[in-house]
Length: 543
Image 1 (tube, rainbow, N blue to C red):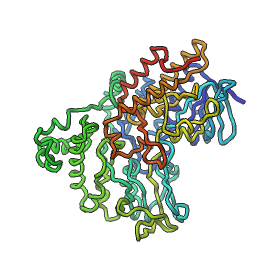
Image 2 (cartoon, one colour):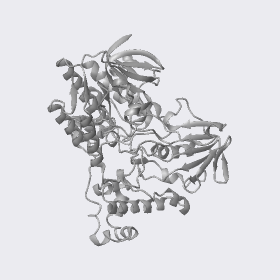
Image 3 (cartoon, rainbow, N blue to C red):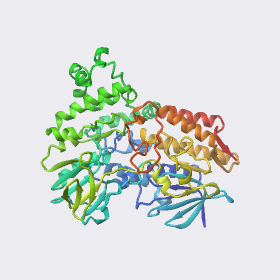
Image 4 (tube, helix red, strand yellow):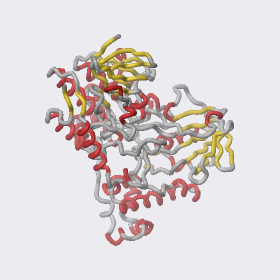
């Protein structure tokens, strides 16, 4: 059986950078990837309209000066095809594919205690062993498809945004139903409307969105970034979300008078026309999210919510449709912020129909379409835009088995337990990249990935240089960190009683409700990681 120093599961951006970094450290590395090529999230999510919600010029690797200087981004917020091209460029430039096995889905990761090695199985067949295992499986990589009666009986075409085909999908002259209006649905719906004969949008819950930046990348902006990339990377490290130009501004409550704060939200809008409403007009709805107390003060949040509702009501022409599109039972900041391009305007089209599932739930899928209440809509295509089993789905699906045969599924039956989102007690020498308990999805993922991979590489270097063979966290450190993660999130919109988001696992039936990402901000998290290392890997058992 072949042996490696380190095995990486996944060839998205985390797996790619990990391979490059660990090879630089002199380790013999093998990467296993279920897809046919690199890219991870951007390989699988090819649906129409898919694009990143972080400025492309910052959603990029900072480990190579040459890479920074040679890549051109076409848009400020680039689309999936361009991000995938970037991933392929990185793979080509650093010769990564030679150490990646594609079409290789990991079905078991088992710790062999007597040898202190991890045994990796591909498609049920044991393939290799390694001293270290790095799970770079991504936070949003296992599609969630709801269990609907009769789903298997549908005679038309079935698609999922998270597993969109490589080949072109022809929707012309077809009746198309899309279920879900989260991030992928919001991005896809305007494009699907253009491609299909008629689009039926099945909305499970209304969503807050803000308009995406549509600008093409200007040469002078790209040149300015290239000239100042070192400073920009430093600013990313100091920024809450890992984006150098992101700034939190003054309190939304200070933007209105004390008297207006106590008035009904509708009156705040009327009386605040010269401040907040003008700011929305000039800067867009996204300005509401720049106020810090929107995330932690319920009164401020409702001011922002009402301003949002008023703006959307002015865009959507039909009052009943507008009413259904407005969230009423949760506030801005509860769920991952969604960027849109013509989402609300799309519902003014005569060939787009909104079905509000809160009023008329889906009863079943029939051979010919979708049944809601007493009516059946005939469809040629059903598209599930129903998101992911986030944060933990891919890790649990990998069938990880630690000390004494204990599975990760057993350990996490009441929710994910991990130290720093990097390691798990009972699973020595197993590392998770952007795992639960780290900033991950609340941060620029490229910044979070580089920090995690660098930390893991330094840790392995420390172990090997000092003759150690194993590292894992103590149970006490793990529990203390979980308590800290939840304490930091307490009192924010993320954990409000009315909030049911995938941050909490609320989109997956039966999944324990626990807040998974670290909301304390990237700088605070990184500082904690660095301090733990300086204190001789405090909270870890090294043997």
